[in-house]
Length: 95
Image (tube, rainbow, N blue to C red; front, side):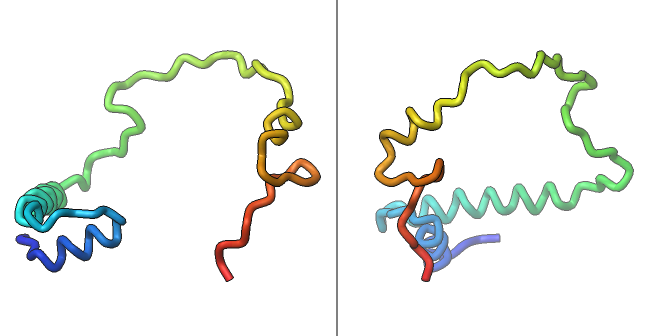
């Protein structure tokens, strides 16, 4: 799947990445090869393969779940621009 320059510009805009015109051809090539690899991976038959949580058959060593630090809310909120009743106050960004 070959990407054209328009598609590369749209992807860059969606990702909020500022790209230079001279690099568009290189980005198109690299993104196209990534998409071709994903397409190749999708063709692999994984019907009889069980999902893994880890590539090796190991269990994690567990540690005791203990509190290592006390409640520092007052100290941390002292540096906040606005806090009230233990909550951080933030400006409304969606109307």
